[in-house]
Length: 274
Image (cartoon, rainbow, N blue to C red):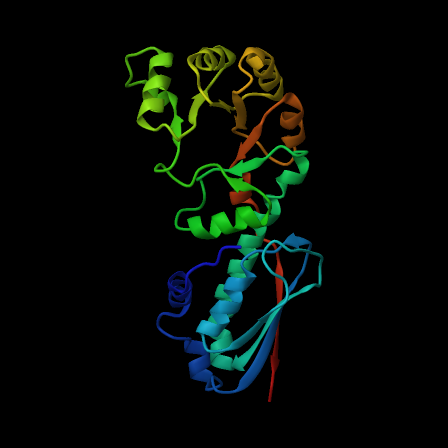
């Protein structure tokens, strides 16, 4: 499982306490020894506990990991513990807790893969701005994959691209294959007629934008003569309808739903070590 770089974790700490912890300083308790623990308050697919442990370490505490990213745990299961000076524990506490809660919310929702009955689930690049690396880790911890990480590594032709073209679809596909011979040609389509057109043009993947399961099934039937074409259902896909799209014949489910999932709840328990 990927790890988030220390530079990003330092930024999280500085964002929360760039000017120091005023309350702990004013109370004069920073040097006192203490300990804390994280535990799941509800079932969750855990994510970013490794980063939480590292946050405590960067703040000067010692920490032990109990549940790694990708683990599916029930309520009450310990996730990590940390001990050290109160100043160190308080500095990392909220940054670490919020990170685990948010990332575990995404990874738990990414378990839409269970509803997809074996059809791969891929999450889009519509993550919360500034959270791409964390979102990728959370998506993968939940058993899904990434649809595309950005504009630089895949060919996905939207209608908005085609507005600027003056050539037949087959010519577009042929030109792209000459330009990028290692890449799959993915075309987003809005209806079955467009799907048939780009099947005939030689597209490798059709992204079926906001198709109903019935429309996906019709597109699957229309693709009988183009067996190499993959159908990616996109737009409005979630755990409640994933099985319907899988049964309709989609080869891939593309979703942004995990990014708006509510965070999971982590219980933090503090104690004095004196």
